[in-house]
Amino acid sequence: MAAAATILAAVLGLALGWFAGVRWLHNGRTIARAVIADPEEHTTMDADGAVRSIQGADLTLPVDALDEIWTPMHLERLARTYWRFLSRCTLGFIRVLYDEDERRVVLLLRPLTLLRFQAPEYEMDDRRGIVRWRIEDGVLVSAAGRGGDGYLEIDAQRREAPGARTGRLHVEVEVANFYPSLASAVTKWFYANTQSRIHVIVTHGFLRSLARLDLAESRVGRYAGPSRDDVPDPPPPGAKPSRERIAT
Image (tube, rainbow, N blue to C red; front, side, top):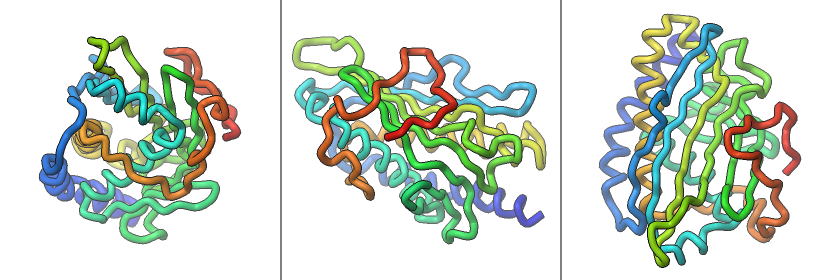
């Protein structure tokens, strides 16, 4: 019962905070144009209860601005920007705590760990950049989804430019092989109409916010100096990440 109450409190916090996030999102100058471009079946749940959810956006921006941010340092900042947006749009109810080998998404305080991720993995070449957090455990994760098989991933891909001075970037946020405890503790219908729907709304807000190109400075700064050649290459398009953790 305590776990279920924590889950419901987290869902409520996300719902209430989203309204503040919308107001914050529309403040500030935009540099790029962001258009939501989700896959047709953006959220699915298989017979075993594993969720896959993908939200995407196409960003059109000056090619010079795109070239400037196409570095491992800015990929790391993109990752930090995601967590910053999550905290802001929930009025600080949801926070991200950093440790050397893990990231915790907590409801106000450390003991209330909603999601615990392994340290992020980065992959990048001249056309694609990926940051991936493998899901370890947490209140929102059922027993079947613990141990790092599921993951949260941001995938940025440079696409064919519409003009010589214009660049195009497709950004996707994917949750894969996630086993939500809410679906098993209550009903799949309730999960689909609460936690899942709020996740989609918040992620769309994050993707739209990228039009400002306001990338937060990394808390860790692992890639403040290295070039793309120092980062592992991403897998071929459509390929699933290896179950083996990438050493980065």
